[in-house]
Length: 154
Image (tube, rainbow, N blue to C red; front, top):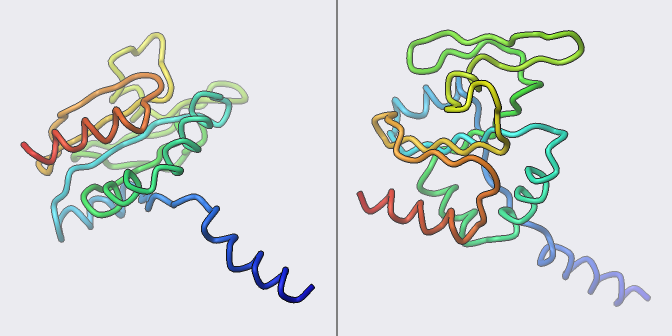
């Protein structure tokens, strides 16, 4: 019995998902001053089923997780529950309450579809904080890898 428990404990880590290192906007500004890297901003909501499926699929892809962790800053941004003030590219953005819910102004500023927001939303910035890629809706891990490799090659 002890051998079975030992084997189980030894095998469990191999079944675990890789974990993307996520940061905040305030951490990002500090990190960018130390070492400028391209940045991925992933905007999602808790109620978005596609967002949950996508997150699970992305974290399953160890190669993608390693690439993002090593070569990019990754900010996972919950559009409707992030309530703190954010300073991004020298501008201040706040949470806009609307009854029992609301949205962060930064999401509206980053989205091209102000009237009909689409989640998940992917914003990729180069080292100079310039927009190099914009993607609305599900972004499959193979597509992300291909796009990120092109961005790194620029």
